[in-house]
Amino acid sequence: MPATVIVGAQWGDEGKGKIVDLLAEHSDFVCRYNGGPNAGHTIVAGGETYKVRHIPSGILRGKECVIGAGCVVDPEVLVEELDELAARGVPVDRLHLSANAHVIMPWHVAIDQGGERRLGKLKIGTTKRGIGPTYADKAFRLGIRVQDLLDPKILRQKLEVALAEKNVWLERVYGAAPVELEELAARYERLAQRLRPFITDTSLLVDHALREGKSVLLEGAHATLLDLDHGTYPFVTSSSTLAGGAAPGIGIGPTRIDEVIGVAKAYVTRVGEGPFPTEIEGPDQERLRELGGEFGTVTGRERRCGWLDLVALRYAVRLNGITSLALTKLDVLSAFAELPVCVRYRLRDGSETDEFPAYQSDFHHCEPIYETLPGWAETLDEVAEVSELPDAAARYIEFVEGELGVEISLIGTGRERERVLAHHGPAALAG
Ligand code: GDP
Ligand code: IMO
Ligand code: MG
Image 1: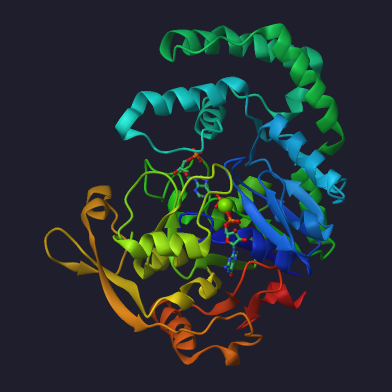
Image 2 (image 1 turned 60 degrees about the horizontal axis):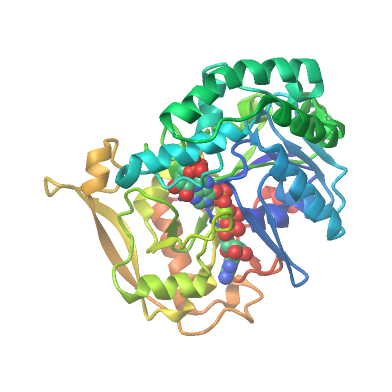
């Protein structure tokens, strides 16, 4: 049985939550391998909308869910999320939290916010959830891990050591209020009690599941172009978002992964700052945003909208080893008479390339070269099979497959769980 990675192929919000939820029906485990509450994955099922930030999107299907060691966890947000799901009748007792995941502390959030303020015009446009500072402390080997929450004495010791330094930063560098030890220790001891039943060795748990022939989904958060190493640095998040990051993020070997499904929108969106070659100028930007409901799940910010960028998507196929693509939100394009698709970039020296530029300044200054495909006027509301797609929509799909040399296995035609067409079905869907 396969271990399948689901990875965002653009700048995030591609509809990973919906695709994971769909594939979870035929899976036993769903495991998040990176990121924290900067993620926002939406699932629309039975007329209800669920938004998960920490918890894997498989929770609604009642599957075993894992938050892996590569994640960073804000205990307050996680407890809130657990309570909200439980209040809505979703059982959460099958959640497993890695003892090795790092904990987002109040000073990480304050430093993220203060850092963005200080950067001013040069800001990254982070979600201000403390992600960068938490991963920085992890790399600096100063982090507090989930397992540290289990022993009040160790926790207090670690908080004391951290606060001695962090309060200097908060007060002197960011002009923020210092954090008080006693209040903090009491609050985190309470949160620790809530999280204790979920904390375990999740690497071992997933290894056992794979050995028993269980089917495992590895759910990526954020996306390829937000990857710390290969994304559009510095306008990236601070974790390894790529499919390859799933192995260390969970604690399994890379040879255990059988399939990599890239999730891409039929157009592109980006939240936050940074270069975006196919960003639309003019009224179509607003139109696409309204039609696609392109407002951030976590921050409510307007998502910047652009036409499909095949140069960037080709890069995503390369970086992740994508075996098939899920192309979401095809229905949103129904309103456009013509659909520009970026096939190459023109660089500053006038040369053209269909490969993603390795140098940031080339990417900043490149211009998209479009091929314009005909649109279709019909809505996709009644389309139940790929063969029923309007001709122009079918040609759009074929064009993308031809340009990338990768099959599109799933096509999104609406927000609801059921609104997906299976094209060349991914193995993970076969169960
Ligand atoms: P994620 O972060 O990749 O899980 O994506 P988000 O949930 O942040 O954003 C995707 C948005 O698009 C959500 O509001 C989904 O409900 C919605 N969505 C997903 N697939 C489709 C689709 O095929 N058509 C339409 N119209 N909406 C979709
Ligand atoms: P999902 O999983 C869209 C972006 C932020 C910002 C940059 C760094 O829902 O697709 P961070 O808070 O991570 O330090 O912010 O990364 N970003 C996302 N954009 N979807 C996401 O997650 C994102 N996670 C981070 O907007 O530009
Ligand atoms: Mg999202």
